[in-house]
Length: 166
Image (cartoon, rainbow, N blue to C red; front, side, top):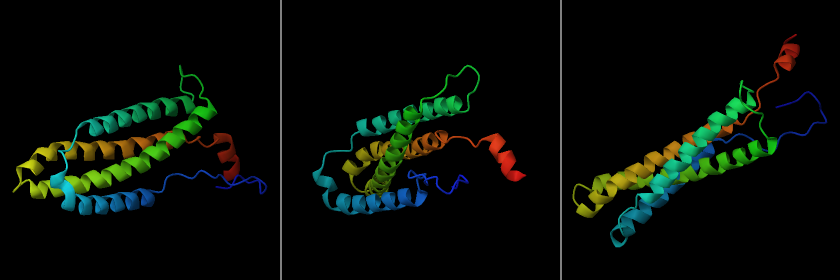
């Protein structure tokens, strides 16, 4: 990402690397599988409230992404956007994508484990719907966070792009 000016500093904040999210999710899944297979029957059933919280955060971030993208592109009827607000949104998006990946890995492993155990244990069958909702909500949070991060990018300057092509 060069600006053409050799003295210009390289940006420090890079887009979220999907590999980072995959590795975090896999580590969380492995941890969940080992933990759940040893201690699940000593724990209370899986709660639904965390899943609903993750889903609400995903909805908020998706709406924020839509609004921010329209404001950055200066669509008619939309006010400008504060640069500091965009920076805060990017930090929120990066944190949410990582947290969502960790929750997704954990809850996907939990859901698979419960689906296997639900055939023989009633307690596991009762926890399966909440675990599945948590997994879907976590994946929705990752998607919304990545969309918010993408929405906060400043579009290329069309005048500069045309000058570079000449």
